[in-house]
Amino acid sequence: MAVVHIGSKHQVTLPKEIVRRSHLNPGDPLEVVYEDDQIILRPQVHIPREQAYFWTKEWQEAEREAEMDIAKGRTRGPFRSVEALKKSLRRP
Image (cartoon, rainbow, N blue to C red; front, side, top):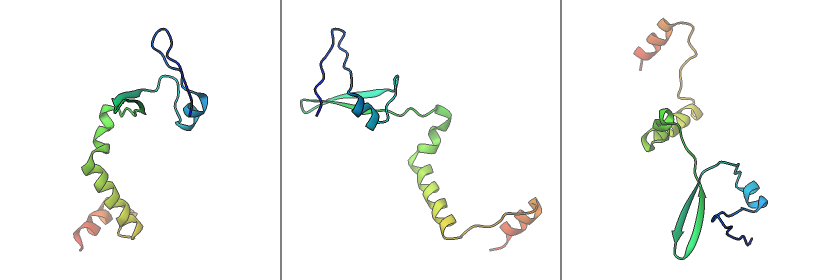
């Protein structure tokens, strides 16, 4: 347990060991939550808007399904041509 003090501008300095173990860097955002008489700091990860689709529940489920297919050898290819790919898609 570490004890920290609130500075004159309401700032708190986190102990180096906690910062190191949490993989935090200067400027990283932290969510501050007050719950059950406790102040909780949670690191936040910001995802660029154009990549947000990747982290949806549906996309992640499809990613897991694809990984299982690959692990079980349920794949086709590589193909030498587009025609070979098309032919592969036509057969069951």
